[in-house]
Amino acid sequence: MPRLTKIGATILRNEAIGFTCIILLTWLAEIVALPHLLYHEPKEFLWSRVLVRTAVVLAIWLWVHFATRRLLRRLHELEGFLLVCSWCRKVGKDGGWLTMEEYFGSHLATETSHGICPVCAEKQIAAHRTAVRVTPAKPPA
Image (cartoon, rainbow, N blue to C red; front, side):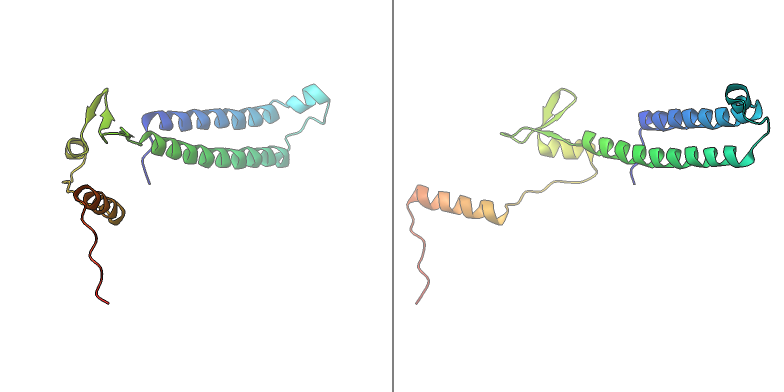
């Protein structure tokens, strides 16, 4: 699981502060009897009302928190894409262009090697045969 970036952690912290404020305001409204002042309800502290409201806000907070984490991870994943030239296969990094070998050598602890996939091998063999006008050998009957 990838770590959140500094910006991602700030976003989640701001969400937490906002939801905490909502919960505190819910409790404050019940403590100062705001429903009595605004709607002339009986002046009493109703545990059930404040606890249900707190539970609803916590459930929404939990859902928003995990949805935001998922979106931030996806955004981090998308930001991790490499910019690769379609023609020469060089990698764009910090305004410059590096060969694949240079990029992997400087950014990853891995060596590079070269090979050819079966599809490209067939294409290259066919192009070579066409260029040198060699007819493919016929299999023995």
